Image (tube, rainbow, N blue to C red; front, side, top):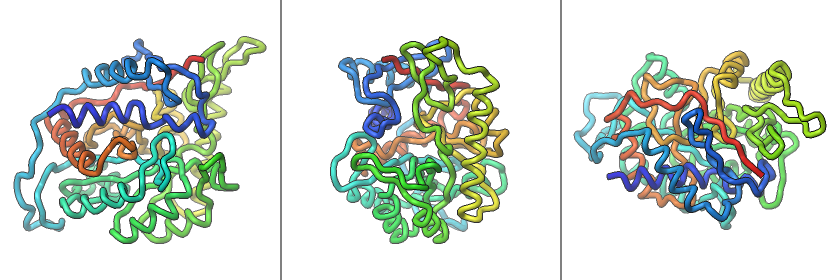
Length: 368
């Protein structure tokens, strides 16, 4: 019963960011660190250190201890007399959100899967009667304005790689499946390039947005990177207060607030202006990190719904909109069938323990 859930946890904890070092987003030689004082597991999002296997097991156990598991899921009935498509019911009244990053034909480090894998997943969703929902459906569900279909799945892509336009978007059109693009807004103009990675541009983003299938929201304007927070430590720029090695002083709270708040506001304005959107109220946390201070600033900037990078749990109507959970579906270690089974198991665990919630803060500290 636990094997799919634990494997998904291991992938979420480690494989999400192995490739970030290759993009220059965080230094390559950090080691894993744990902020025990917050009760949150801090994950290394870089090239794995020599003790990676030990750290991986510890991260999985530490996180697993926080969540009880439910019974093995199975289809229970057939939907009838509802506005939703008929089919077996695996779970109801919750959404399982999936996080992807990049889809490439060649093997690259980090969260990169092949087009064949993603196509097989979309095919399985149709075949097994999953409902791929829009972000608007999810937010209406959270606000109590509308029900959510049984077997609801939300597809999200982070960062904004060009493969989303050339590879993912044609598949979304084929299956008529919606998706959410959380873009690093600064990367869109001019397009970001590093090694084999290239980002989208505004022309491509606007075309997908006009299709009605792709919702576009920020992953900050330009805070998806690490900053030095101590003599030998770094953290994500959204949660870390910058350390000055020359003066040995840490950025003041006022300076941190101004830096982060101005970025969040700019990201929102840029998306609204380029796409002529009236409302931009969702975002995803860079590296999945957050704390009460950041959440307060995000609300100040006008956002209402924030997605984490993991936690592998379903989204219920009672879920805190500031910590909406996702599965790292873009891990290359998932098979399409394994992902489907993991979705069902996580949904069962969520239904069994609906009171579980994410920690109030989740901050990573990487050591040189």
